[in-house]
Image (cartoon, rainbow, N blue to C red):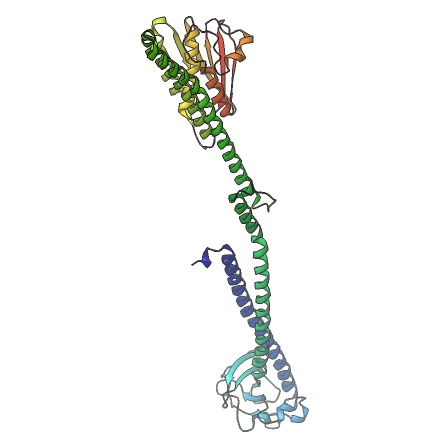
Length: 457
């Protein structure tokens, strides 16, 4: 079964079977055509002999047929058992057989089927003589003036020459087709080797890649293989990029957690040294845990978005996510009386993870509700393959010169509100990973207009 798993062996076997079957069919057809052609030529020659015999026939005084053998051109008519015969019978079912016959028949007769061809017709029969030789016979009806009724004039010949010619042709044909099959086999082997050579080069390139000698598949390949090589190189590049990103994120996370851990360690040291510092330790621990949690959430969101980029067919309906976040924000900011209004079409969908959409839209809504005086408005629309989500509030807004800083990690423009300054940074990071963006500007209400651009599903 190992041979059937080989593409080379399967191609060779299929090619040889197809070529062999084609040559066998061609051989049978050519042999039949040649045999029919030779037979027809044989019959045409016999027809010419029949014309000669009929032209030399005379009628004697008794109304019987007569013919001088010397008037016939073929000497085989006078040589016994020569394989060439002629005979004249009385026509019809009751006609007399053997009225006149060639000397080559000696004391035998042609036992032809009793029939009577019409005027101008020739009948061809195949029969076996007394010596078990196959004969081909052609006959016509002759109505000679003065004859006692019509005659059946017949010419017969042994088919041995025809069989011998066909046998010689079949032998030559068989050897020729066998030689052609060998040439086709050699050509098929060469074709398969040359055709599959790029796969061998690809296997060597993969071996170099596996052993670390190269970082990608090098070289040019045929048009049928090159797309596969390009896709593999794309996967390798994405893997390398993902590995580099994972290392960077691990380093960023370790660096981000170093500060809160240092603060916690200092607080614990101070608590051991002073009873007064012990009173402030729970609040310190809570604040630093929140900071660490925000950093972890941010890096997890980045990892999730990076993984979602390589996943095909993701689709998250926008309306349920937006409405769920609106209800949460209304409960959180219920004491301030903030009205959160969402105008989202039910057919809009985001080409990404639901958690990432909640993270981005949730941060925008949370910031808007914290800054708003009384109203927050959420709208969305699709433009081609892009989904545009806008969040507006009627708060004080952000001055134009400070908007870029607001999108940076740790960028907090209002220290009076709780937070780590990662909200808008997370939104920008996730949007960028999805090929989108976030833009900040002013609106007609005097507050902040945040436009989030994401891929539409």
